[in-house]
Image (tube, rainbow over all chains, first blue to last red; front, top):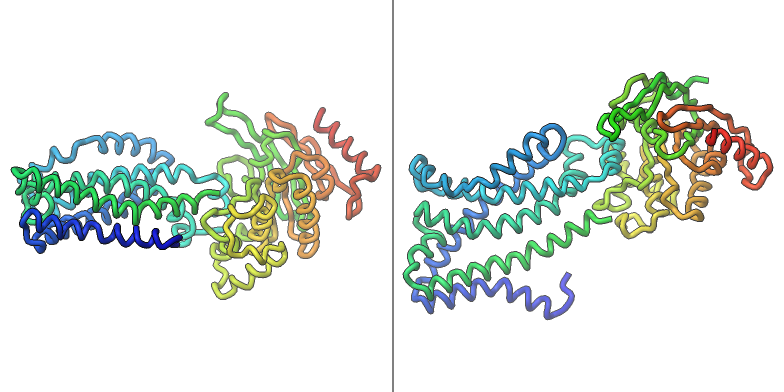
Length: 232
Length: 246
């Protein structure tokens, strides 16, 4: 897995960097590290919740709608829905449901579900006829059908979609948090320091560092592995 | 002899082709007997693969009837694919076991039954390899092992050796004949190669294309093991060739 000492060092560095950055920037900006961690943590948990829902729901929808008569109707509809700017409905939602974590997670979820959904659909479209026929002749059904066939074949799409979705998601999350105006979270952090360009720049850089680390440590290896698994 | 598969007046029309309503199969009626190697021989596009899929239940959109003999169930069938049909994310052993999983064979029997088939096909060392790490010949061995693992009464084979180089194909044909002689399942196979049909088959249905029809069913009386350079073999080859060309 780890090819050299340098590889290990770089990995450890990538894990440590975002945290070191947090500590250093809290010093520079004269912020309590506790508060910074709480902001990052709150946003992270919202992201995690929205991502988990989007992954499961996107997967289920993709499997249900990817082909046949359903696809003919559903895919164009989803394509239009995808381009609908969900954030424009956010102020109304806040007025109706109030400023809550649920509102944030819901809107974040409907933003990041699309790349996940469409990537899984495109993964499912790579299914070869003889794979399906082999599965049919083997008589695989129920959970075995999912476990041995549908899940493995759609994992590359899930991972590609997750990378795109989460990449957009962080940006969206900050925007949603600012609009909803809930206390705690990166949105509040950026809104609070919008008058201070130095701290805003620090914050943006930190967020980039965090996203970059997660991509490099988690998603890219997963992406490579998943593509190797389905390639012949 | 009791037929193991009885096909009557099977028609198949492809609707989504251009030109539309292409007649792929036109009124196919024949019986397949238990324990024989039955071959469909014809040029590409004569619907022979489609017919194989109709018989095996993979293709359900057709008219006419396919009846199975007494005591034969759908789960008694397996299929060997032209392009192997192996799932690339599973290991060789896991691929071989898929039929056992789907047929509800008790889990504790899987390992031993997979081991038997791997040994039969000379794949013991590759149990944990992925299909992409194997050559075409080895992949088709996995395909054959998977088909045998469920102990089928009928095995459908869709040009199983056509993706292999001629040496590997010949080797695998011989090995397949040896395995077939052990348990004598019914084999229904498709090919476009006359020598392959003559080498393996007991009976050969010569097909014409567009629409796919059976021209004639020929009984292959050549004694086994078949000598490809024997005059009788050539004579049969000529006869089949002229039948196809008609």
